[in-house]
Length: 285
Ligand SMILES: C[S@@+](CC[C@H](N)C(=O)[O-])C[C@H]1O[C@@H](n2cnc3c(N)ncnc32)[C@H](O)[C@@H]1O
Image (cartoon, rainbow, N blue to C red; front, top):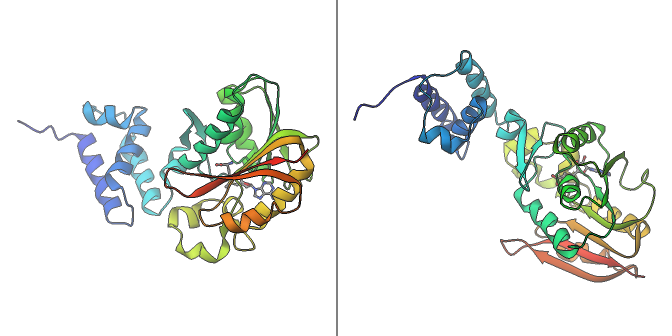
């Protein structure tokens, strides 16, 4: 069989080789993903049916993308998008790249509230808006307030809500609940919870490129969760639900934050790896 050596094959091999020479764990995958995204096709489809010719300028743009990836930049910041809960979210350096494990939080909330009741929901630390918008799209009668301290993150969340057609959303720039009016039936959050002390052990993609405000918290990563639990008790309706993602080793410390007599049914939910990663609690009537 004659192998067709065309520009596509050469570029893909070149990108893979450049990434393999770095700490990139998935050079072939990333090289293919960056090229497929540039060509506007799925990676699998591109590999099954490689293009015979590339549009003019492809090589130059692709090499610039590979250079950014070689420098450690995550592929999703390079493409500017990330899939989450079956939707494509715009992402950029102002927001955390949504993680697959956070989809479990969306799933947990939706399972708990299957009905079409009109509920008021706050997502604190919304970033790209991935949790808030996914909930808003699944439950159009809910009123979802997306909160973030970062105005730049909120700009991206607003763009995502508009692009994905989530009309039942409002956006508030606030330090936790400081500037958020009203009471909620559900408060959901994926707050920053990484200990500043482990910063140097994180992958370069995270350490150098993702926003520190989205990652780190004082008090061994617990400060924002502690304050969020305290403030949520004041912003939940009686019988309202609190859901929060936590670090895999933070269960015992987090449990103590609910010892103020304001909470019932404090439950830790495990992720697929068996770690306690979501805390759920009910505001005592
Ligand atoms: C871990 S990221 C989560 C982003 C998004 N919800 C997700 O799951 O991908 C945490 C977010 O909390 C925001 N944040 C950090 N401290 C905050 C505070 N005190 N008040 C409000 N938002 C805060 C950050 O800007 C960041 O967008």
